[in-house]
Length: 158
Image (cartoon, rainbow, N blue to C red; front, side):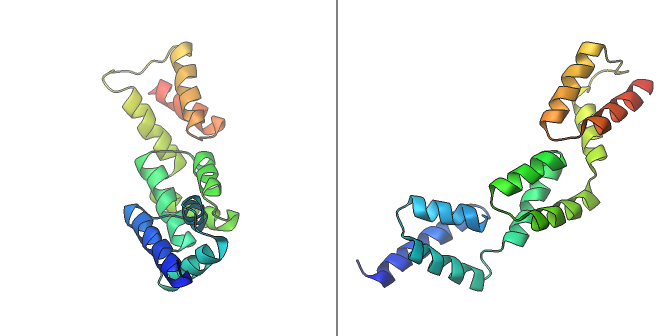
């Protein structure tokens, strides 16, 4: 198989992958390598995709961070970890999270989760066990303990 034919197959595979959802450069490289394309072919295809503006880690970071913060209501720690796993540089991850937090703060995300989990109860008077369970769940979503306990304390006083 010729180089041009191999490159075209890699290009078509990349287009199909990007049609499913936006991907970071690291993700796309891994998928193409996994399908058996050599490093030189992957480099050429990735370069072409950047030139065509189909691949943009900055834009991907903003979209991914927004999805995790707004739709899944995750905290900054979980978002940052996810972005790092996807190969996004630390400065781009910080920019993406700052942009997202202008839309919804971590405190607002915690309040929404608490409201959702206490739905149906008139006065969410938490006992210690419920409070621990909720706090543990929120920490698992990447929220800082200080914020969690501050919001749970305010919620208890309401």
